[in-house]
Amino acid sequence: MRRSRRARVTYKANIISKTKMGQSESGQFHVASRDFKPRSDSVVRVCRLVCHEWKELVDSASHWRERCRREGIQPQDVSRPPVNWRQFYFLTKKRRNLLKNPRAEEEFSGWKIVQNGGDCWTVEDNSVEIPHFTVAKYFVTSYWLCMKQQLIDLKKEGYSAAFMDQLQPHIKISDWYAPRCDCGSMYQICVELLDQKKKPINTFEPEPVFFPQWNDQQWCEMTHVFKDYGPGVRFIRFTHGGKDTQFWAGWYGIRVTNSSVEICAAEE
Image (cartoon, rainbow, N blue to C red; front, side, top):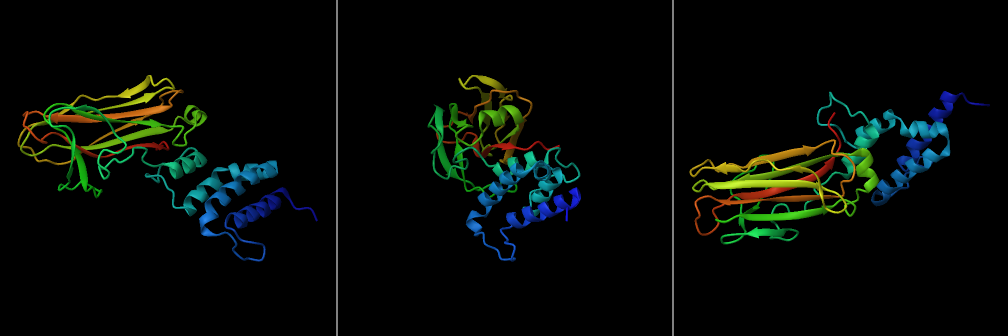
């Protein structure tokens, strides 16, 4: 007996659901936890090739919205759902900090020292709480300018040229900085989106931030989101640092830690 189109789609959806969950027709689960993720994604790709109806089902917003719900992936503001649930799912799953050693846990591993003035950069233990984070160490500057840098190769991090050019996902940067209470200091940051030849396409470089002597020594966050930056972005160059403004020997300058660069879904 021929099924109606609606019945066929429902039947196929049930098969997809069972296959994704690793359940056989007999009801027995056969997918190990370690290979659940790749098998699940490969099943979705195969299902899209079966027929037009299956492709419609797998590509539908309801399918990806439900997948996000099952995996606990939700927008920060649930009252403003994503325009494209599929894109939101993959960007959120892939999201991570692209900077290496952002909290000074491995001394200066991963960082290029661009300027090393005064008594040079050093690392110290953190004793002042950063809101919502547990950070044990920070980088600290001296009495002449100290700057350090990382260059992020997007292709090596898994973001292809086609991906960046077609989707142009948001690029979110964050940096925490703080002065000493007994010494004035200066903080500065520059983040550049670069093309294949490492020439800037878009730059975030706010005015330097100055702290007076005898301040409250609290941590501050610098944030920025790159949007609509156009095609061609292949690298991200992150540079930050500063100095003290009293010219005291030692390490009385600005402190920096918990830096991040993330490729993320647009928050619609």
